Image (tube, rainbow over all chains, first blue to last red; front, top):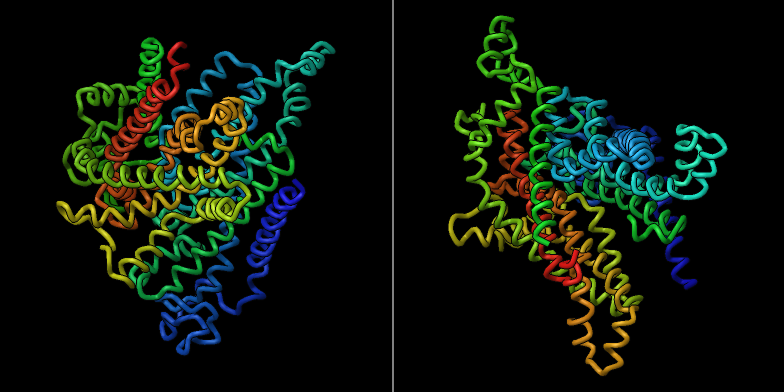
Length: 282
Length: 309
């Protein structure tokens, strides 16, 4: 039992350490590299990482076919990965939670409508939906965030709806109502605090999924447009050399994986730490 | 039971219709198909004419009703890019996608369920810990990246499998290995994790103790009492993952240039070929809804208790 508890906390700790490391790397990118992510130099293109005999000390992780520094692109790309993922998951959590609360508390027609909409979204693969929206809308930061948020809000709405439904039958809600609290107060003062843990855990797990979807979108050419640096697009742009220059695929992919791993560990750890009973629900 | 099946069928049909409506409206709200088809210098009159030609000048609801009427007769409009009917184009791609998904689901189940069962049986052992670590890693790996790494290893370095494309005839089974394994490697850990948790939960129940107490061998307890009860939660998760699986195939097909539904949809999306996008999303929705309905029927076979209600 004790070993298990330590193992659980270890997950949380490990996740936090990975994330702090990655986020500070991308924030202080300008201290860690002298290169700009967009800087091209055809004379130094396709250089291998510095530990190869043909590599250069100037470019720690080598360069791509246009001579762009891989390390600089990973550092600066992280900024946009985190920016997009956090904005998309925070906005979808906000929208999804409010809609879920309303549907669960009021029930009736609103509830029916909501469950139908969720059914519709479950029948469309999230990535296809995100791709379609990203392709049709003008490419850019805001539209990418919106496209990702649209694929994500139903997961909150579904969870919170179920919880709000069962909570609204409990005595404390009835008590609140009997002392004259209006619906708005019950929703946000009594129900919302009880949903907080669930939203928090779901938020981390969804952020991990959003990072993966965003990188896939970028890989398919429908993510952030150039000149924004992007991990997924690095893989796509170097497609012709993917099989020869391993460093242009390995390192950006590792960056994505490490980010998602950190967020997943944080989410898993948080879930076990806050409430082990949630294991069944999420 | 028949009643509930009919109800499920109707609910599924409703979902498909709703999907078609949602996609139809969303495409017309966000994107302007006309703008994609005319050169940048087109005059206002040109745009208007094109709009009329494509029937985009009518109110959206009217357009949808017209689309629905034709769609019910099997006509989903012409592909703007290929200039042939959209649906047959997509249907041609189904065998390839079907082959890929069958291989992927088969491998996922064949790897995931035994691995999860072993992990539960020896919970706390090295196998259990390794399964849990690979499950976490599998959930964190971008699928296209894993695909590229596998291509580099098996096709470029070892040269034992074709890198991309789909060989004709029996050769297609050789080319399906890499994309199929890629998808399975990402889904099997999740299935293993669910299986492990369910097996652990079931093994602590009274009927398992009874089965052991009456002298059944461990194998019989496992096969006849535990695994039967594991099937329902695991297939529920598989059903819920269907959308993800389809999404995964879209990306994987693109990396491997696998000539299936996913690759074709990606092309349609990047060409803004909206009749094809519409038809593809509806087709995927039909599959996802159908597979989930099929699983509902399977539950009643796995679990006789569900037949009563």
